Length: 391
Image (cartoon, rainbow, N blue to C red; front, top):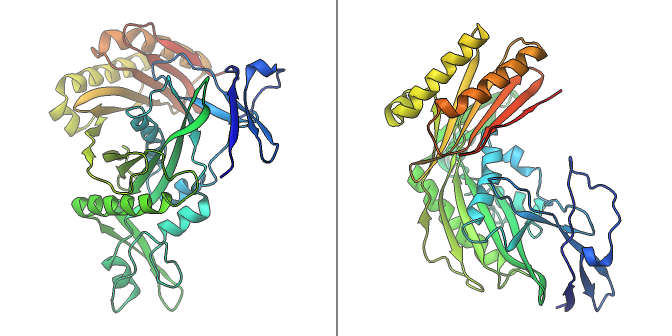
């Protein structure tokens, strides 16, 4: 194994805007330098600065000033049926990592060990000859293609990898742990084709308990495989199971279980349930389970429509963990508007949020039109609202 002589001189500050890094001059004191003693290669590892937000996002590791995307990036959009699941899966996986890797001591990097070709082979059905690495079940026995596919539904939808690095004056930057997210289907959507090349579309609801059990078994198999990969034999690994929502749902799925595997361990001992839920406002569920917030939301919607003097699409989504509201997101969809109306409505809403919603959780409001997002309002507890209007 290649030995690295690593020295830390300082942490540099860089800013990422729209995926680009501005051209700035840096002295040697601004970067972490890793010297490859065997190949005489030298790489600069830059740590992005902390952004002062309530979310306390991880800083990122840049190699030679470049953000390194995962080679598997792009697969998730094609594997998951519900578009609202895509962002929640990735951001939720980062949030789960905060329980194991403190933001002050660890830096984030997209997964660098599992490439797209490997993950795609895992997502396909197992076939002894054509795809022995498949983690989804082989076709069932049946008299038709539909029976074969319906008999053994595809359970695993996506595998996502995140890496977390730590750094200090003595040891430099080292891989501190890996987080693996497994996305599991709620409904299996599939199609068949007849001899006349006509397509038929089908769906099969999956049993929740069977899906969770399959996810845990898949995690164990992945653990065995990645322990054989160079650089992953000894690092701690966290697995998280994500249950998707049905296609077309307005709310995303949730993480349902997670486990941590210690350094060098090759067996998962136990799993911990994750208590997470999403509630849409307005809805009968919201009225029954969250009557106070539901009433406040209805009042907010009435105030907006009265101010605007026309019907406005107002939808809210509350995210709950352990039955406690973590955040409330509100979207307003405007059919027609002028820029002056956007400014006035944004000002009106920013002045009403705190008096309308008696919550100690962040509130995010997005005003949208056919042209995209027009303005955003963010209210953190005990702070003045942050407002931005797009020009």
